[in-house]
Image (tube, rainbow, N blue to C red):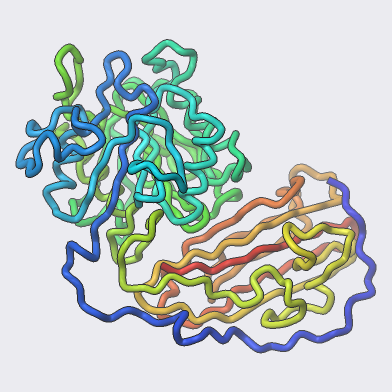
Length: 476
């Protein structure tokens, strides 16, 4: 999109390199000991309001809804609850660290229902077979953006169990691309329209990954029995990561299990419902026991991922309804929307501006890097202390406007770093109308003082503007 070329005349007011001062109360780390179970009760909601039991499916943890404890308050084996996901539910229940419920009606966020998403840390969508309404998509995306965990489980293309013209591939892609919160590839992946008949996708080698190496075991392989994969797009979300891949695939294609982030929340994707199926279910359904398949480690994958989404791990996360933990929730960046003008941030002259040539997302100020059409380097930075024991997420809204016409060459670039880590690089090739939310998990920086920095480097001919607004560094 063509934009207005900036004048080389910049503001002359120098920014004070003040760094960030945060009150002791905002950074206070809770040290009072509490019982383990009280501090780590992770609230998980399994959806059953979108034809998850249609046809030959039975994707429920129990026939007792919303509370599976009404069927058996202390299950010792998966047969104590009835459903093809009962092994999953019972395994979580037996730890004493999880509170599980089933939603049978429309999903909401911020309402009064007992199954409202604000009451949960994680939402599981086990192969939905009806489209989510506009209001439901807003609720789900807002829930994740505000810190919730989302577990999306697909099946192969054409698996339309209720014959309404929609399958899980279409429904989940619609959720990600047709919502009112962020439809610009917010999670950094799309689900492939494939029907892969069989296979044992292998896990990548990453001994530090909590999903592959968690409290419930080590993941080596999963199972495809008519499923699909995802295509990853790290340019849209640098936190997207493939963990399990279809044989012969790696990198950005053929991801059978993937994770990502959005806002302060976390996302997991699984390309088939067969791995979570424990083969029991209700009378009349012919099911397959993928949960206990000896060629795979599906139980460990499902359970570790649930724990990671809910924030039951060393690096936090989740927490859609508040959650427990040892970190005081706070937003740590000073002057996050630039409305205080040239304070707190250290920036090149003229970067923080009210110029009408590029609109702010909210308020009057924004940070506008480059946009001159001449060789230019602009920077914007702020140092911030992240308390130990916190999960931390950096987010900001970015608008890229360019006069470049190429579709293949990145002439102008914006690099985002946190400490010594490069989080993402954007260019004129990422230009789009409007602002797009970008978010990054920076929990690895907990216990340090790190500099958040944006560096825009523009070539010598056509302008590219990198416009930033509404930044945040949320800890929980």
